[in-house]
Picture 1 (cartoon, rainbow, N blue to C red):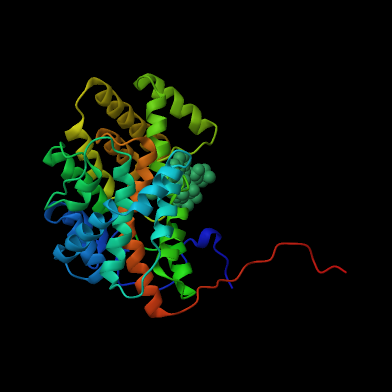
Picture 2: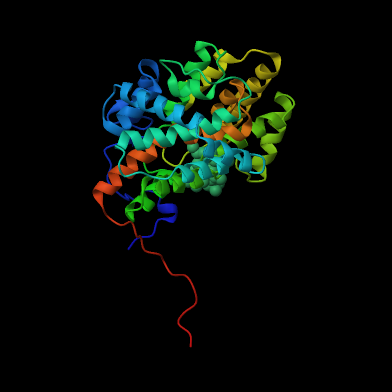
Length: 349
Ligand SMILES: CC(C)(COP(=O)(O)OP(=O)(O)OC[C@H]1O[C@@H](n2cnc3c(N)ncnc32)[C@H](O)[C@@H]1OP(=O)(O)O)[C@@H](O)C(=O)NCCC(=O)NCCS
């Protein structure tokens, strides 16, 4: 049996949910171009497509509003928040709250998914000091995480990044979700596996690390010297490269355009210039391109989110992808159990 480190290039299952990098740089959700979906549809439509193969997101939206409302009045959840928020990273809070809401077999696929998404969004909103109680009719999920005072551009920008985060084939967190599902475990447990896996800096955590890097430079020259030094020391620059795309991450230009449109004050303009400089150096020195997380972190900063909420927002977007893969894996009903290449000592007595 041939061994492929990190399972690179290994086909580990079948899916009808998405294709990643099929025509070099494309991303399609159930056949639809994900980039075009950001121009024509909302996150709720894309989420409904991913879960139920239906581009009309109205049922998804209604369910989300219902569960979000229930959470607002749930005394137990709000008590749990107070106990854990002050000492845990928001990712750990989300993992705990999702565990806490548990799983109900009586719910439909759409209901179970929206209930989990409502819990994730509710946790994110709870970190926002501004009032987030009014949900927008069109960009409902995005509005739950933003202040009521934001502009339509800001709502659309968050909606777009949620669409782009929604689904991405057999990436590490989705695969972890499918492994758990393959044991016939429940949806919540499977999604908790996904959350834990997304937290790592080589996956969802890259957006936090990318912004920290950009913020660590005082100007363009400082960035140039710093990044060249890091490359010389063989350090990885977070937010660059990709396990599947080899020419470009198609999600990155959409996110970069939003940053360009939203940058307002001198500080954010400078950070955008520094980011573009790092992008230029990575292309010149390593022929590496930015993935969704590089400008993604800057966009979320521009929307006034704290750095430690970046990966939770990724969780919110991706929860529908994880759920769709959970349902698909349960239908397939094959236990995922690969083999290992033994490299330990020979037999001994
Ligand atoms: C995403 C990632 C894990 C993909 O890995 P991969 O395609 O398997 O590529 P590898 O890690 O094997 O790297 C191949 C080469 O490119 C280099 N490389 C890859 N990503 C790099 C990065 N972000 N910064 C610097 N060098 C990088 C590696 O050091 C390696 O160089 P070498 O051949 O001289 O050893 C990798 O690009 C990475 O770690 N990126 C940073 C984390 C990140 O942004 N993650 C979010 C992904 S959406």
